[in-house]
Image (cartoon, rainbow, N blue to C red; front, side):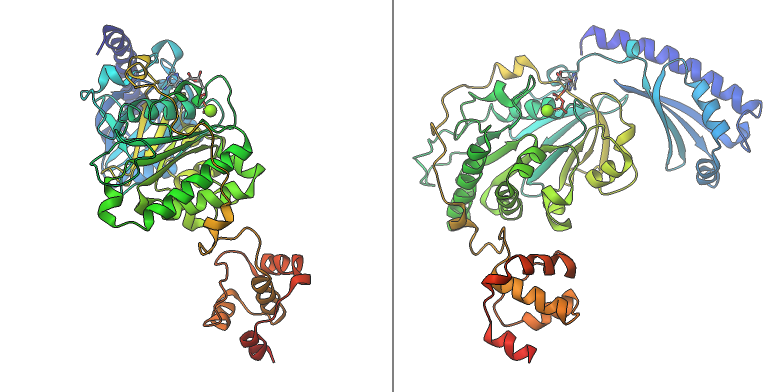
Length: 463
Ligand SMILES: Nc1ncnc2c1ncn2[C@@H]1O[C@H](COP(=O)(O)OP(=O)(O)O)[C@@H](O)[C@H]1O
Ligand SMILES: [Mg+2]
């Protein structure tokens, strides 16, 4: 670890130990409502790179009471304890018998850019990438894409550090390129590594462009909507092809990893993109096809229903705009990603042992970027495949079929709920959406009323 980090840490520790002294005095003089000094059995601190935390150990029975009854005055007083180093929101909560109060360091006390190479002990990636560093112990958090966590979402408001986090992951994964070329698709060798697809509809200052000549790229970086549709359609066709192989053969193929920035922007512009993404999220895992999607906060409109949210099990959530956005991204009200500070994030990693890790993200490192082999994409342009050829039979359609619509109308008219509708359709061979209220079903139905096609079984049921 370089000496700058050490210097700043010393300054952090000095200011936080001053705060501990003040906290002791505050408790001793009855400065906190309904809370006396003897309630504290221990006070500790943790100096992370971006935030400082004071931990107060209390009688286990007192901890919830304290947090529940913490008054506005207490908050103000705690804030005054933190004034040495604190900036932004003060977050108070409990872990076990400890009450913690966390606040961001003042800018002078925040450590500057953190580079994974200064902390990571393993210089080679082997499918992992170091994503950030936790509090004082400086534990490096490594993430990976695996059978257990095949897809990851990186969420946060604009400028929170999403693209940088994805580039950091890309630069580590990009070192591992498969030896076989795309046309040597026969699964005979033991080629492993990563094939990459890059999708970035924004192309701003901080974009995937820096990675656009990585050697493992399948095709050119997709930026226009038509290209994005073509790239994702190719991925779905590759998934279909792989899923038809034997499991052993699939395992020997390189992993295909799709990095996609600004998901919202792309799915708003094209419902086909949303459909293709859903298909990849639900069926990609078994074909060694993994997704890393970046966006503001996952909403139903972009990621489909609850089921698709659970198809993106890994989340890295930077500062979001509101508590609701945090809830959408993490699936829980606490911890709250809206209270995070610059380049800090919460990580939900089902493949690791920790459920939520709060950490400061690493900045993408040119020393790592320089090690990535460069080359030309294996395809000079994305082939024009018809998405419908691959979506058929996948039970995902963009428009409801006339039959589906007829059922929806019938159900709504007969006042059937979704369960009844499903029962009514059993054995008719008609697929029915599992999401959508009777109202939306009816709307879809009316839109294609003209094309109504009867189903003999259903007609019998109705009369
Ligand atoms: N961990 C980090 N450490 C230092 N600077 C960072 C870090 N993450 C992002 N940045 C910087 O912050 C700015 C915004 O980051 P970016 O990843 O483009 O945000 P987003 O994609 O969420 O809009 C960029 O200039 C980037 O270099
Ligand atoms: Mg970005």
